[in-house]
Each structure stands twice: as structure tokens, then as C-alpha cells.
Image (tube, rainbow, N blue to C red; front, side):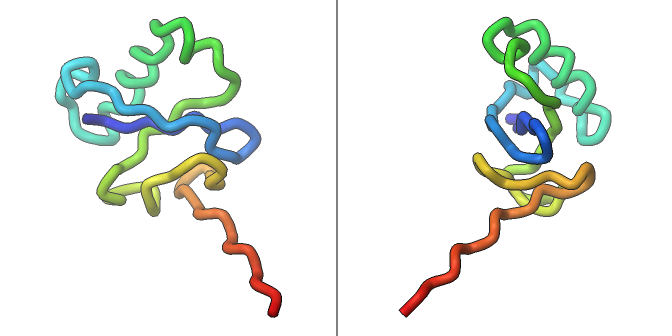
Length: 87
């Protein structure tokens, strides 16, 4: 499976999995534009605001596997800051 994160205003808004067959079993980074083009054919996903970026479930590229609310600096996904605990 290939994974893609939807980023809007530098924040991850959605994360999905795409079958390897849909990306021609290509490796990253060649698979990224193919996956983005595939996502654009899916009306419910294509209608969401933002840009789709490929991410790695095993954190092999782009820093870490993102979740909702993670940041993205154009290169790596960034976990949100942990809230400070007050005694």
C-alpha cells in the first residue's frame, strides 16, 4: 500500500492508503505523481482542499508517518507539539 496525506495550510487534514496497483507498483518518489493523479479521479477525495503528498507508513521518507493535525514543511511531516502538563 502507498499512503498519501492531504495537506492544507501546512496541516495534515486527511491520510489515506492507495493500492500499489493504482500507482503501477512504482517506488517513491516516482509513485507520488501517479498516486496524486489517481486520487484526482476520486470525486470525494479530489474535492477536498489542499495538496496530496505521499508519506511512508514505515517512516522511510518525509520524517515520520503523519496523522491528522501534523504539520508539513514541504519536506517532512512534523508531529504536533505535546501539550505542556501543569501540576
